[in-house]
Image (tube, rainbow, N blue to C red; front, side):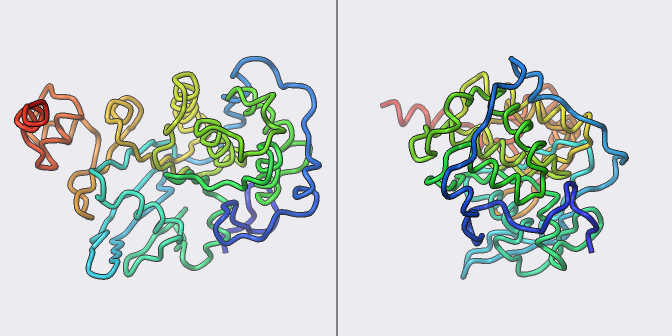
Length: 310
């Protein structure tokens, strides 16, 4: 068994896929929030008490493979994410990044291989494992018939946060992401960026030990994107949160990731600190974008650009 969840409570998935309907108190939209939390974003970035754990391995992905018919999406993929580390999961479209994250969560069961969280096989008790994970999918699906406040209260309740604690913590994030004043509007009327903020807050709210973030900056305004990047660094450094972060924006990966894992055609093409990968590729002085294009066989793009410009 996984032991007690961080905040107690019964194991339930906070994601719309395969979960029970929200309780009547939530469906009736009776949840509300009082005065705003302290101004600014400081409260949303508050790291809290450091976890009593070292830089051990939080996530181990060991030889997972997955096929969809004749298409091999993942082929014996292996990598680790340590406590207090941000690892970038990179690759071209169709490389297997989203499939890998879904396989880690058990949303898409792997054909072979093993995923271990905190040293235990996730497959043995998936519901308990999810208590320790915060997840933002590439295209978040939220309960549109709830308000933002109700949805976040519902998620926090499933993770077992006490009512008073979750109310304060949710309000801190609403203020930090500039959603205060919009929290009592239905999610169906939210913009893409507002929905993304709600999905991020839902992943952060229970202080998970592992964050799985698939293109988490999609749709965010520059201020919210900066808050998210700084918050991830803060969580890794102060709470020893392990972060697996998928993005196509290589400048962001280079700026915030401690290591990168590059997938190509379902296989791990390279893994390690960016500087190490760059040196091994013989591309000293090049940025991550140039290294990525070289390793994935993209080559010189000038001919393509010239042809498209005619």
